[in-house]
Length: 446
Image 1 (tube, rainbow, N blue to C red):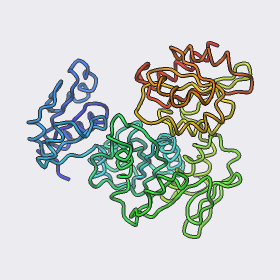
Image 2 (image 1 turned 180 degrees about the horizontal axis):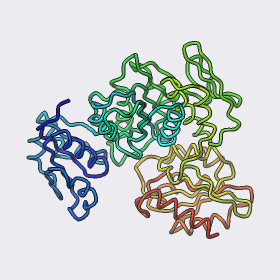
Image 3 (image 1 turned 120 degrees about the vertical axis):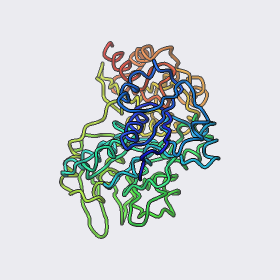
Image 4 (image 1 turned 30 degrees about the vertical axis):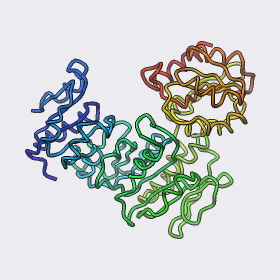
């Protein structure tokens, strides 16, 4: 793809936009960047572009610039219905995402992981497996470094592992992973999409350019995933913790079994450090991707055995008076909280935050069965209380710190206090990491 002297507009100057602008300018493109924020607010990202001859349009999006561009590269945070993008699309301008741009310059096989929950853990495990197998591996995408950095590296990677969000898939045209995994589907980002189906459709685009030579690793136990996986062009490779599979990877009686083309590998799970039913699924998905792409079974299993939990995902904080405290701040949607609740009984659940528009009703059976006390915080507390409050002892507190103190007072020895919000953090905190640190500090102060 020749970029020299092409007029290219980069929309959005977060980490991904800066990396795209830098790459495009280095290839000789005539780059313009546009962002609604001010020069002062963008001081740090703009400093990274100082050495390049790049036009800046800040605090505005000029439709004329969009229409005058040969190509527009859209950052993941920019909504598809931005009026200037709609006008550019109607005028026939080429509009692509960063992962689309990057994939046109990547020769290595790409293993792409998407799903509502578990993407980061699965991507990180898979990257670690490849590295332990001796591959020079890039791990990034929606976590860490943008995919475009592989293109900048000029072929030094022989394996690429990318976490991919629905936002990144919105403007693809030829992005084609050798192995694509869809871990699960539950309501999320309904503040971005017109309805749940639009979100599902965005996720499914990870498969749309695959051929029968590629693999689609999918969750056999998730009815939505399995229904939408029928009819894919890629070879279907399911994973399951409930069903024995002739072709695929499954869990049964303490053993993960991988079956492919008549070959079978067995991995006992007793010594695996990463606990929780959701992590069993993440491990199987990562192992499937790795083995399908040529990793050796022994090194694959060694990596899985030694892998520890990621921060802010079902992380044990401490035990106080016989009560275990767990921090699950990355659980920003209902599907993620369901998996967390499946991992414990006798739970005091701290939940709430910024409402993302989905229903909390899917949590009802687990709340009724396993949650002894429900403590609600944040903007979503009222709606959560309406949908779940009658199922168990339910209270509301003004702050997260108050919630932790209340939990300590009402949770009996042998119980578990779990902060698993089912909401984003932006009503009360900078991000989910700040929410996590505040919870940890409150628990340590008990």
